[in-house]
Length: 74
Ligand SMILES: [Zn+2]
Image (cartoon, rainbow, N blue to C red; front, side):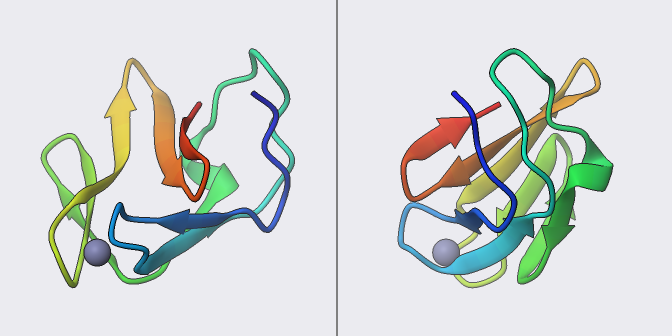
């Protein structure tokens, strides 16, 4: 799934946790430098929402998955 620059990273409760800063095409990994984290805290395998502690970014094998209003991408 292609995600575009400016896509909001939100937790499942809709709290703003960050922004995607570049377009990421289908099959291209999301990398740390593609993401601006705002309102989330680094945890063991990614980032969790500061307000409800839900996971919003997961990091595995060097690629990130991020939770958007459309669900998980990456
Ligand atoms: Zn939240």
